[in-house]
Length: 448
Image 1: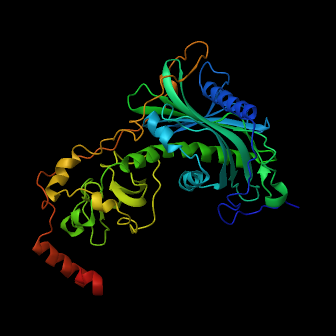
Image 2: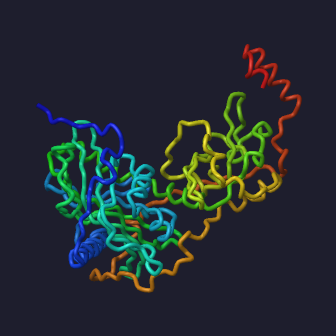
Image 3: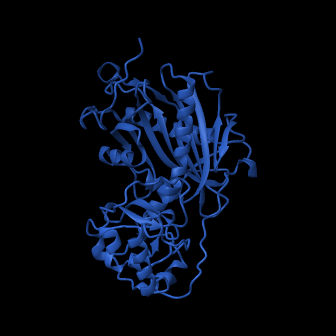
């Protein structure tokens, strides 16, 4: 008889106050803090491709993403693999993206960035960020991850440590997850059929790249799933986890877009006034849908824009369409959206503070694209001292291990005039009307 698999049914199956943290002694908290710092040190050292403690073996290399294995699949109880890529971003953006220090913040974080996370909780904060160290954090957390069909869900109880570091004269920031046993976080196998799995020095490392404005990302998983998991499931899980690394390109862009003003509906270029896509210059067919960029206001086709989920400075989250020019090119991880409507475009109070930009400014502003604003945490003093690690001989940097970055999408403008250069003439409208009539297109389409 096969094992039973309990479907989650919905996210967050446990009440918020399910885990009750008892009063802990200072020496117990100090020991946990030291555990987190030690795990972070191991993560940073283990993530080195060369001259590190782990002999990484190439497993996959495509589309700017590399996957490395530490052991052959099935040869050990632990699954140890690392994915590597490079994206445009800053350490401040990486630290801000992973801020989730309360259960409410953690759940919002999981709903947006971890689709397979069923439930999560912040159990206890051991060291909160401060003004002197805004990017540091140590705390106890619990999560449940949904497994594929026939595989039981796994839950983890772990300590999370986030901190800046410097190794071989390279600055970085890292987030480590390391399992701990807490008597007040019971095993849920009997009640929820969750299998308690283990993280060992797992997490993500961001290092400043030799290329200015870019980050090298190393995501390392060292986990014991505590059960028999078929090899095909392991391979599937590795590819799935590794490819999630490419989404950081979109995450960082969405963060930057949240700090720039958006146009109101009455400031957008009328869709009917454009015969061609403003970017690729593809002519719009009679049934082609046209989209407005909420950053520059221009009219673009479906292939030259993306619907972004952005959160502005007022913490209002909405979905807006932004063209690839204003979002600095097409994202590497393009998650296509099936919705055609922008139901949340006009929600909240952000629209009242958006500037009134005349239409004649659109083409002029497109020359500059989207300038990345300073990170929201720039006004906070950076810590004077960072964690410094020694790892033996300096790492020899070879181009073979540098992730390949595809060239940014560029668009050549073909017209010089302003607002009316793509306006449809009366004769063309009449001709289009006759064609539609001949095609026996009735009602609303012909009248349009």
